Length: 368
Image (cartoon, helix red, strand yellow):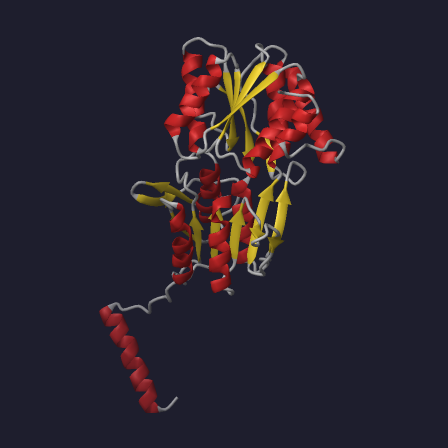
């Protein structure tokens, strides 16, 4: 080092010692953002949307959502993935496409839409942004003729709901004392009718003489209507109600809760997520759709550079569907749970095929 450079270096060291200046560490790069557009039920539905939020916020981001914003969450069963969540709520169906495009414009690393109603919006925005990966939960992409199509940047995940609902129906058939069980459905569409088909078939498997009463609300967002329909089923002497209707289903759960508090021996089976915390004395179980795990695993694969488009179908065998713990006591519970578990094993092995259309069950002479 030349004498002049040694002098300059010494002067800089002296200046640093006098002023106490320190070299600043480089700023940490921002964590990648993962975007999620919720279905109309929104945050707080205690079902489908909340399951997706659990996978994104609590598990993948390690954050707990509060009114004041995100807070650090306690340790979870799955390790956080170092991402920042961006969640957009849709007030009406027309919000889906602009919300997804907003995520793309904000530079998210992965855009997700939860709910079959987002199918058209996801396809449109994915074609417009071919370099951005998308996840669509609960529906494949369909062309104008209703045929399944694929895009390289879109992963679609569907569930064999009828398998989980079969177990719920089998349980209901074993629990009922009146021989009458009910179902509150939302919109009468093929997706929800798979719930009905599985539930009817399950009841028929364990209690072929039982009657299944099914009422559709035509909605997924009307709590009051769901409660009214649930009350109507209870008035018809049903003692187990299957609530498969989004926010409407929460209303049905409330109807059963109030009837239970009034002394009636009734119970309710939830859907998508376990709602036992809402009515611990009334919730028998729930058909769990593991949207949370799908969201988490898709984020992890994207972060690891392993994301692939295509269609995925999940049922009991793959762990995509399941039955929540049965917390209520009833006569013969241990034997009933063994029966349900045996039926589950037959479905997983492929020995037992569950129908996907209610007409198939009714044609067999079961559950009018």
